[in-house]
Image (cartoon, rainbow, N blue to C red; front, side, top):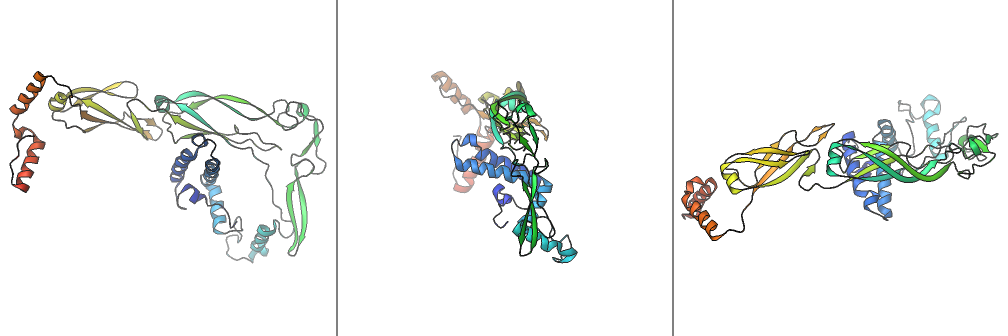
Length: 381
């Protein structure tokens, strides 16, 4: 196992990473390398496959524990020393495991089971509106895949009954293979060559699937999209991937989301952000304004003397998720008029001349600093 893939490096996390850190890293990489965003790119597709493989192992505590041991002890699986640290204790138990890893067997009839093949996973992307992602919705999913043949129930035999138990393996689908080596006799268990590991011999093939056990057809179902999903979220539906031959289980379906932007709101995790223009009068004298929310506009009170760029927080008005509810952050910007008539321009000039410098805090501080540093007097500008 010297060439074993390092799943931690693939996800870009440390060996001490928590499950939350692993989940976060997986989501970011899955979004970055998703095949829908790299059509025809074989390298991206292979990277996406690696990412899923790493996540499937590291997100399962038992698989991760076994993987960590194998990573630290190349060529061995499980605990070769039985926890005692003596490679020759317990009837050569540890040494036998080393032989197993090299020759695929062991002393005295040790066996290694092989699992049935599993169908490939499928990835699908669903388009969601900004509000559908926030509030949740029900969507119909349609895609082509290899489904277990309904005519033969995936057996490949006509009517699902035109087969008999394999005489060589007794219906188990596995047979023992014996091999003599310099270390002794080894025994492996592998797929039966007569039935291909299915445990049965087809007497008459299913006419619908030609004995394959699956057919190519469109799969259609509805899925409940939970409230609060984001572009780095995904759903997994077990058994909805490609059907497998030889009695193996079907792969899984991974659903990802492409979310349309909102015309005014911007989302970051559970929080929402919006920039709202206000008049010069409202900034100076204060007042109430309407700001966009998830379902409707909300009223926000602007205090007197509000500077452009000031941010207000509306708590609990963000995205509601199982981890909590975010906030709505409103940034106000003073809308400067660009087209004034002569009369309006004169009134504005008269207004500014009527306001003493000391009434403008920002300009007064600026004038004081210039005077202190440069020894110059500054009027309003």
